[in-house]
Length: 308
Image (cartoon, rainbow, N blue to C red):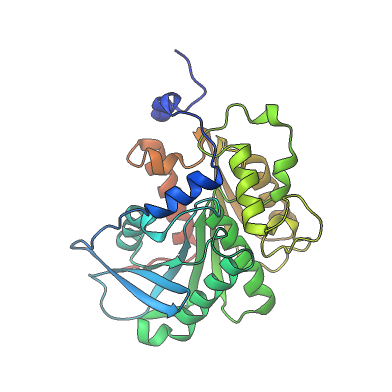
């Protein structure tokens, strides 16, 4: 049977369609993902920043001296659920293959504290790492920010917040199928029939929870909804990746266009037949490995790597 999915993702036709409800989100938060133990190549430790924020730090063991580049990573979950442990597999690979430190932030998601708490929590982590760079063995001139889904939207908002108020000279922003525009909830429903894993109903609940108001309302801060930002000049270069069966496809392409129009270099990787979160569900498939390789290559080109 012919499906719209990439050949590596054909089994996705058996994934049942569902939407988050407040009850499902509460249950999901009661069962957080289990973390990965450190291996022979990468150490993992938790560092407290403040009573609300901590950092899950991944460091390559083979590089014990000098100052390493940093990728501040922000997990997804639609502002309804999620924890940094869900991205342990990829963060270990990034730390090992690139020779960098990955700092995955444990922040207050929108279901626990509405906007702008997620952005300000992640900014507190960013400042903590930047100000403590000498003691933590980090290169303060090679800091990148990244995230997936809601975490990608928070990462984009963090970049805007840091540009306006911060002191950290960010080198790059890595936005993996980012959740950027609450106004997507107003798009015609029939255009979303083929999208998997993150539905229009889930999107509406996620945004309204995070914003503590109706999604699509007027006078919403661009730090919470980056697509609301009018002026994107002066931001660090970006990489945006998204699949053609992802609810966020159009808003991500539009944000990339606006970055380029503002003079910001932005590479876009559109994966045909890929749905939201495909690289998590089918982590080891070739299309997912290629997608991660594209991200690592973008980080290398931005100088977020250690050459040994």
